[in-house]
Image (cartoon, rainbow, N blue to C red; front, top):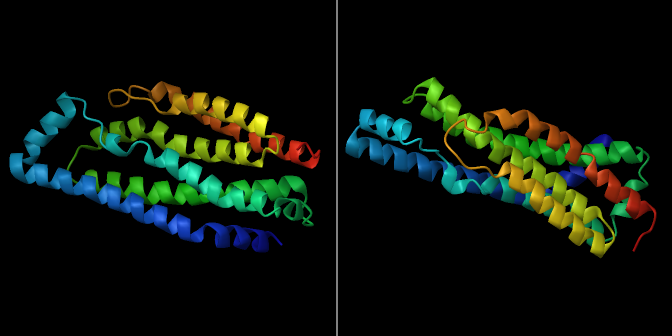
Length: 222
């Protein structure tokens, strides 16, 4: 039954997931080509100097991609459940409500984790060939809040969509925007490294939010 539920989630999301994969790879490839072109024109030593002395944050141009990926994943996964009234049937599967919710959210989290790991990990690994590991590590710490924002936006999207009361959905959306603003930080490399434990803690808390909406759904609040 676990495999059947996960397969159902894959059927709903597979094409959008693959499309997001292509978009991320193309975006990373475009930035890599720009770096390569700049290195050929001015030389790698000068490029090092510019990046390090001017505190250049790579991938800042696409910092909203993880946020959008989380929202799109949540919409693709949960809108069909609500619009086609399938969620009520899903909750009646012989798995238990908590396990069903855990499997559905875990599926989305794993998909995003795979997407971010392959795209960002591959990009940073490629940079480590030409740049010092300390510099690459600083860039990683700088973009990590934006990556975590993708997971946060996914959990918040699930929380909003699964909520059966429209007025409560609007309230949830406002709260969600305020929470997401914590993740969309800007600054010099590694400037927000001390916020990471707080952001991870926030993600753990957000994982409980969809459960609130499901409780309202079961109570029949329309």
